[in-house]
Image (spheres, rainbow, N blue to C red):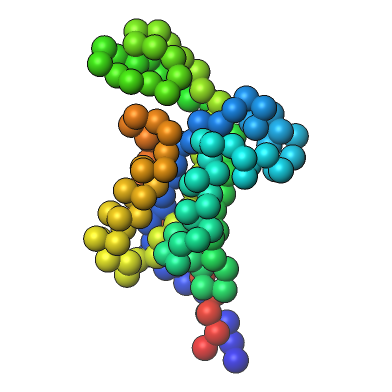
Length: 141
């Protein structure tokens, strides 16, 4: 049996999640114990872990990556921000959660997954990026 390398079409989904400053600092130190209790990121991580489509790499499920960040924004009149207030620049400690959906997942299912992410996100307008990518795969022939 030989192994074959290939790129498999997929969609990358990146979600920017606000977290408590303590959570961000703990993650930066390598302490991940508080992730499950953080209201900004834990619902997204739970959704990925429970999904059969998000982060499905065949032999591995619930695959995602977390990155440390800081988001800056200025709410405008009429906005209902989770933090900050209209007209004032705000900074939010943020974890970016990136996962993948393989091609072949119907568009209606992808739309439902994105809606499920948005419904669990604490922001009025969550930042959710969806882009096409090629994922490295190794299969046996």
